[in-house]
Amino acid sequence: MTTFTGPDGRPRCRWAGAAPEFLAYHDEEWGFPVADDRRLFEKLSLEAFQSGLSWRTILAKRENFRAAFHGFDFERVARFGPRDVERLLGDAGIVRHRGKIEAVIQNARCAKELVQREGSLAGFFWRYEPGHWPASQAQTASTSPESIALSKDLKKLGWKFVGPTTVFAFMQAMGLVDDHAPDCTIRPAAERARRTFERPLG
Image (cartoon, one colour):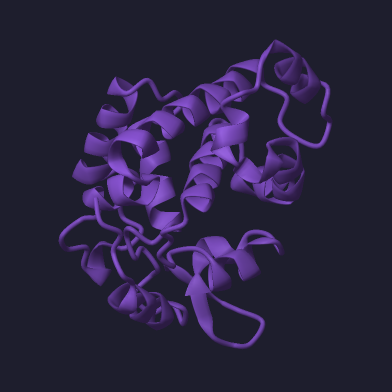
């Protein structure tokens, strides 16, 4: 069973029923394509923070993360230094993990370099969109050949906490893969959004 019956009586991906916070996130964000560099950087950063934790923990703290990291403006985060790390370690509103905090700062510097070289994060990330991802394959995998390739290439560029599973979760959320369950009521809307989405050049 890959779905549950939502409060409106319609089926949705089963994970969306695991916590009250998940429903709006599932219906309005997850699986819809994103081309905004800051949102892409935010999601990859939050996926890094999630490592070893639940998405519910991260989603509940998302606004605190946004405040702490200046809306995930990677140009600003790239300038963070030791004082900022200590400030963030003292912020009870986020996950206080030194390695993950330092990874986001390192990744911001890498993001800045990537934009200077490639033009945008979106143009780079969307190169890894799978050519075909059938509905029958939805929610059957935790990695893909594309997530493995993107993870490998990001690591070569110096990014941290970007393993293949983390990267695949990022691709699912940002719409590079439509991984809504075949009979999920939101899947057709996500599919329409992907059909009309203008892929960024890169």
